[in-house]
Image 1 (cartoon, rainbow, N blue to C red):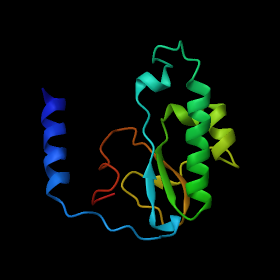
Image 2: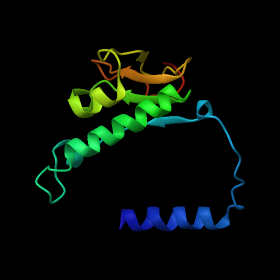
Image 3: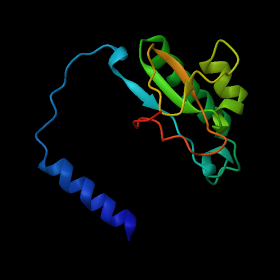
Image 4: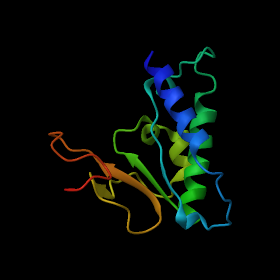
Length: 130
């Protein structure tokens, strides 16, 4: 029921919006957040986990392209992708280190890892107060 309401809402909003105007823009205008749910992290999906390394490598390549092209990629420090050799080999030239505190925005392009609060008291990424 919730998915249906969300789908209906998004469809109504998109249908009411004017057509998007396409413009050529540099990757530096783009920010991407990568969040992987438990089903991907655990290799679920009916293939016994066989596609997992390919998915992790593909996400790593995309993150690397965005970061190297002037965009920003933001990931939580606890992301299963950051423990994946397939992802990190494709995306990162250095060891994984937190580069942002919760609530901070990237000031330079690249792949950014958000340090997660041990207490959970920090505001969510992208909100005031961080």
